[in-house]
Length: 149
Image 1: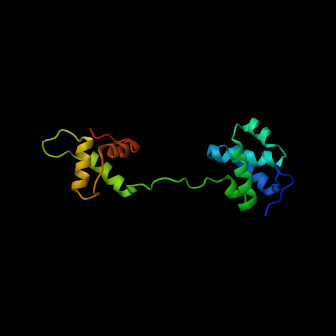
Image 2 (image 1 turned 60 degrees about the vertical axis):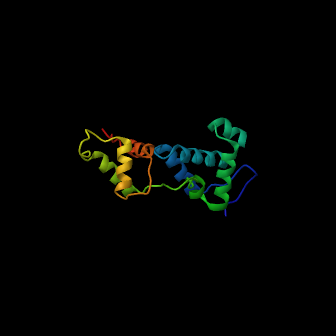
Image 3 (image 1 turned 45 degrees about the vertical axis):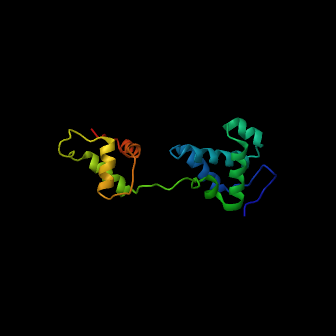
């Protein structure tokens, strides 16, 4: 367990402090992770929440969460991103690749090109899924920079 000096101040080990400074100085990590590192360093220096808020422009709740996670779960948990809730993906990477490949293939006989609705209908006909909207096809193709035409 990590010890507290005061309510707002935490003790960060020298090794961890070095790692935090390394992450910040490299600057190639996620912005949230770098901000959490800064929060921990400022809290370890004895800065009050108001001072950290003013210096970093973060919410008080963020400071409390980072400090609490550090105390209860350690450094990695304090600076890492937790999984965010949300609906699971409806299509696997393989299914998305097949839809993209279909859009890049030769259009059906009598057609000059693919439309989003035609792709959606073809995906259902091929048995890749029970249903898919043309807007879902659009989102899948947009993420791969593909165009149905």
